[in-house]
Length: 186
Image 1 (cartoon, helix red, strand yellow):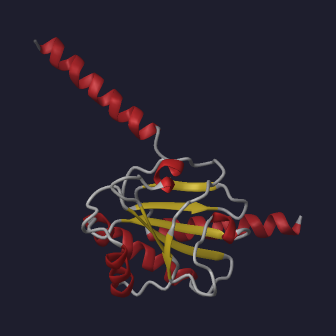
Image 2: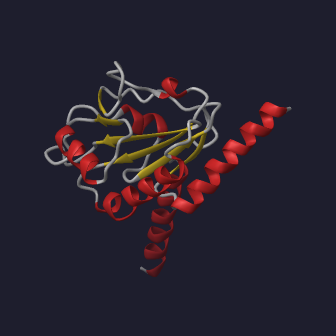
């Protein structure tokens, strides 16, 4: 009996490890987001995608309105990093509500309320329905929300995981900016 329990625990641990290893696409080119609904986009744009931010470092934050972790850590982190780079033309911020559950609560209108609550002026998208999982979640192999993605100037994903502390994100973005500046001066 003990052997069977031990084997079960080992198999369960291996499956969790395999799931974790299949998350994210760090080091790979950033795929299209394919998000249909947007607000706070400015100008005449009605849709945005990764190609609209060519040559910029992109901090992409995925959330759900009803997600406790998004409110406890994700939005505060997003605001702190945004505050550090809000006037920096080299860094772009985008938030996307990636709805894969709780469709009655995670609506476009609720995302707009969240934007107002957290004073988010960056572009915000809304993706996902009962019929279709958000394409971004599949393309970036996200594991849920809150989820943070950092994309460098060359369009390569440099961070893709559940949470990135503000000080780590600021350090990473500054390093990516410095790398680009060094590359440009060569």
